[in-house]
Length: 196
Image 1 (cartoon, rainbow, N blue to C red):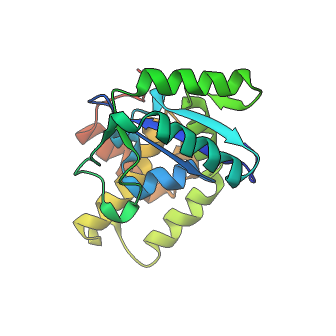
Image 2 (cartoon, helix red, strand yellow; image 1 turned 90 degrees about the vertical axis):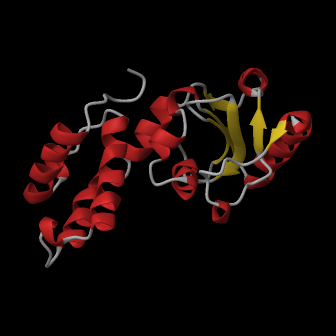
C-alpha cells in the first residue's frame, strides 16, 4: 500500500446485488464519506481494489468500466448521503463482471486485492498509533457520561470499525474509554468480526 497509489474500488452492499465503483487515493476515507459505519454499509469481505501508479491511470480504467456497465447503472441508495458524491457510479447485477475485470487487471500486472478484506485491515491498522491521541483528545476535560448521545455514537462508530475488522485496540485506548467500550460491546453488540 504505497501512499502514491490510486485505487479503483468496487464496494458491494451486504444485503443486495448493488455496488459502487469509483477511484480514490484513500479508499478508507472514501468509504467513511459514504457512512461512518462503512463496515456495515459495505460488504468489505467481497470488496475489490486495483492499485494504479497514478490517478490518471485509475481514472481511465474507471471510465472504461463505467462504460462497460452503463446498462446496469442504478440509483444511489437513499442511505448514502448525496454530499458524498458519486451518485451515478452505482450498479445492480454487476458484481460478477467487476470480479472478472479486476482479475483481468491482475493478469495485466496490476496489484489487486480481491477480495480486499486484508487491505482494509492493514489500512485501518495504519491508524492504530493515532487512536490513543484521538480518543484522549476527545475525552480531554470530559467524562464519558457527560457526552451527548450523538457523541457517544460517533465514538462507537469509530471503535466498532476495529471490532468489525477483528483488530484489537484495547491496549491503545485510554483506560476509561476501554472499560466503557468493553461494557458497551458486552451489553449491546454480540456480532463477531466481518467474514465470520
